[in-house]
Length: 212
Image (tube, rainbow, N blue to C red; front, side):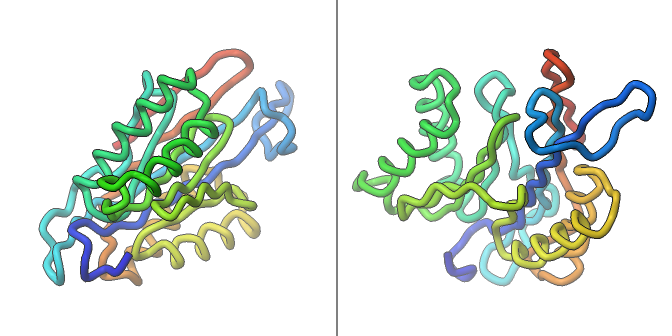
């Protein structure tokens, strides 16, 4: 999406880390197969840009849907993204919370529907099991390295998050915050007013913690 044609541009970063727990040693980096215990964080900046003018500094570009079990975010036109969020939630209801199936069905509708294919946005969706990018060209993409960044500062945030993930012991929340901060220092369409949403699951207890 060309930045000049957007009424809202932003960077959204999602980092997914899995952790194991040892009662004697506490929390530590775990094996990716330990699906029963995991933590994942997701955040966005707060800037809304129209053309070359900053119109708002504190917008929230990530939101919870489907009884707070799924988090969605967007880059592109705000109104278009809201319409797509509604469509995606309808698909979630239809497929009983199956994020992968709902994402594929939304991508099909988005690409083929005469009205929806005019919408200019890029979506990210995430629950405790998966994270995906959905586009209007029919793409549904799951990242290889558990990091997704979209929007104007996405490349900067991706590079920062990968370096921090590989070479530090920072947790998911810290990586998200620092990646956004680095992107905001480089990209003129990204600011440092962040919304970070944490989802985690410990044993059989599902929890959602919001920090905004």
